[in-house]
Amino acid sequence: GDWDGDGDDDPGVYRAPLQTVHLRQDDGSVLEYMLGDPGDVPLVGDWDGDGRDTVSIYRPSTQVFHVFDAHGGAAGRSFVFGDPGDRPFAGDLDGDGIDEVGLHRATTGRVYFRETLDTGIADHDFVFGNPGDVLLAGDWDGDGTDTLAVYRPSIGVWYLKLTNGSGIADHVFWFTDSGRAYPLVVRRSVA
Image 1 (cartoon, one colour):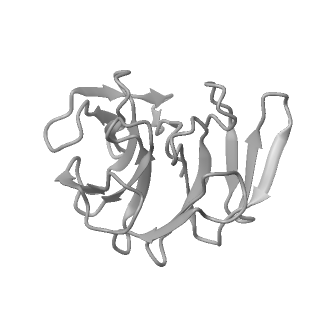
Image 2: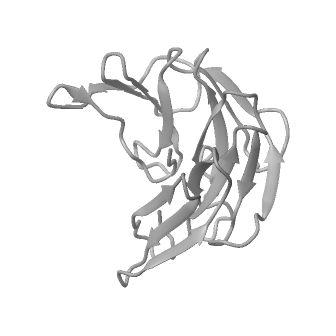
């Protein structure tokens, strides 16, 4: 993520067993702090539009998102969204410069996301992909809006959409290394 707002992404790691965040800085140092509880899922995004990405968490046991606008400290916002078993993702899904969160119900292929970071009914609800697909968001065409992609592990194929909604994929490709398929890592979602 772009931890310091300079326009360049730098690596970061979330060590789940220790609930620690490790963010590489431009000078080579590493910013480290504790975040979350066992079982939490980290998400990366620019939640307030300041040009800096921060790490936030989704707590599957309670379906609560804890959004942090700064590194470390207390959550700026916490809200309930989703059902047990949903998998979180993040991205600027409406192109307004602020990242939002969404949920993927892998058992049905349903996608839910809100355009605001608060509790409520999904602003968008549609099916993309098949049960068992792995979903993530990214700006695949450089238009400033993140859209969805699914990875189908059973056949090693990626399906990318250029709009957020149901329908067939705009791009389909196979991505493997020596016959083994791997999901891509993108800036907006860390799992």
